[in-house]
Length: 219
Image (cartoon, rainbow, N blue to C red; front, side):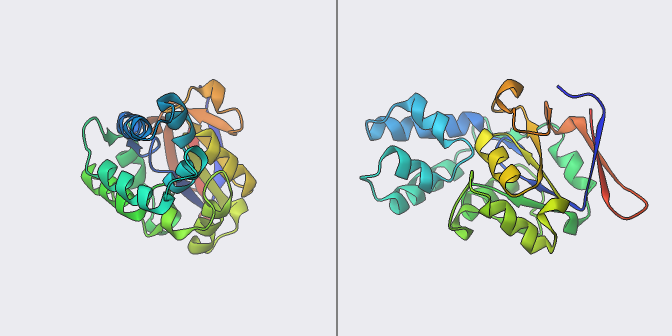
């Protein structure tokens, strides 16, 4: 998917599901179940849900429901499910190479769901964490990534993003960040807005250059 390419940045912002944690099967199961309960097309529910906050997905698919109450119910049910959920290949190894103030997690999941997913899969908690319940507008709006950069004390132009969903890549690009697609949830052909695409995080290496910036090597 990519030859040897090198990007320079001050910090890396990671999406969670599909980038650090492989939760595709769990997400699909629970959205299909929710869709069946509310007479929504399961295929449409799963398609719309990837990369978006649960709150906004419910508002799009079932505007007659109490989206806040449905979000709490669905995400707590999802957080308790570990069947088929595991680390994305290379995730722990990559995070272990990064200084604590050089990376963040920016996810469309709630803090409850996100912290459970990280802990259950043996991944470290980030110093900077942006979750669905801490922003007004979710992906594909740039607000989550802009907030991540702000909390890191960095310009968005100095941030690189790893994302698995078109909505997340759109959000990163709208925030003026470099976006690397991770082809775990969608094929590379559907991640065309990304500056580059990797199969998973085992294709990513980092090091500090002479100026203290991160060199991110793909391939």
